[in-house]
Image (tube, rainbow, N blue to C red; front, side, top):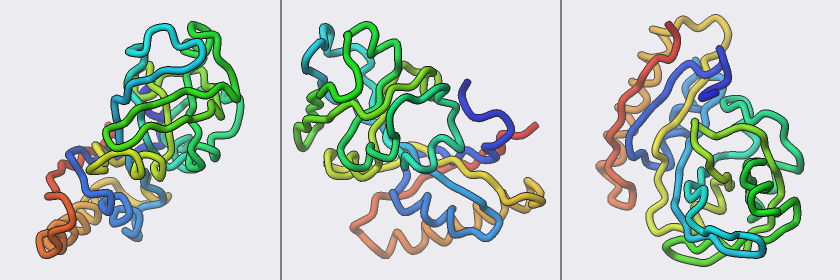
Length: 196
């Protein structure tokens, strides 16, 4: 399952400044927003037989992600992802004979991290056999942290067209302010309504 059925209203795609999701979250019509990043670190550690297996590592706010993505049954504590932990799919844990507490070494572009497995989940993330880390860990591990997309849920009773206009207006303002601040990445985005 790609998104939680009936909960994710908007998908904002592009290479986004990490501030974009905060901007979307501040829109009064939005109930919740989560930014999603990914990296492809080299994995090693006890039991890891093929380090290139499940190379995608998604990063998101672990307290918000379950509102947007169906991870199935989760064993362990997703909140520990922002304290340097990693979550793995059950298929990965079974194949490599690893479990909660096993340490995986992940070599990102700026640093190598020893990451304990803090959660195991049943389903794929965004239809990929990917691992999961917290946004804070991601930001500390890569040269140029960006979100590849953001997801948003509107407040109850907000019509889709009103919510989309409000999000797009906030992102236009963010684009203008970002051009004035050279420390941010250029923002390029598209907003898609996921409801039919």
